Image (cartoon, rainbow, N blue to C red; front, side, top):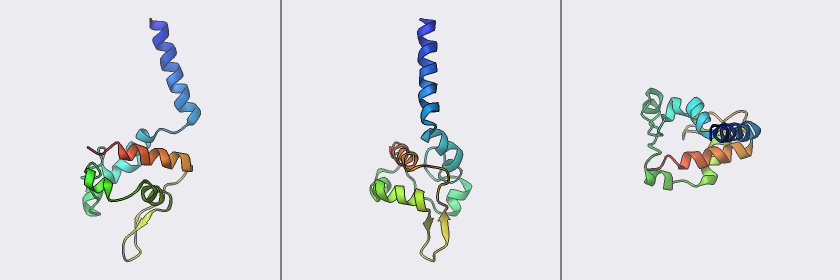
Length: 108
């Protein structure tokens, strides 16, 4: 039994290592600073930027996955052209797609 659990744990870590991207960890490291761990936007920076509550189903329904992908890939600007969110760096299109999927899980 112990051996099976160890093997399962090793295989799980290998699959993450082989792919090399963990959307939940990336959210915690890069996105939560502004958006908050749960996606509520209740951080100091989130409040300053009036970040929306991404746990709200209505807010999530207000944009498509393609729009979310574009925001991550290209960043976002306000109506005056000032950068609100920088484009993500070091992520492949597959990584960004994984981030969008993770982001959608924040909806309550």
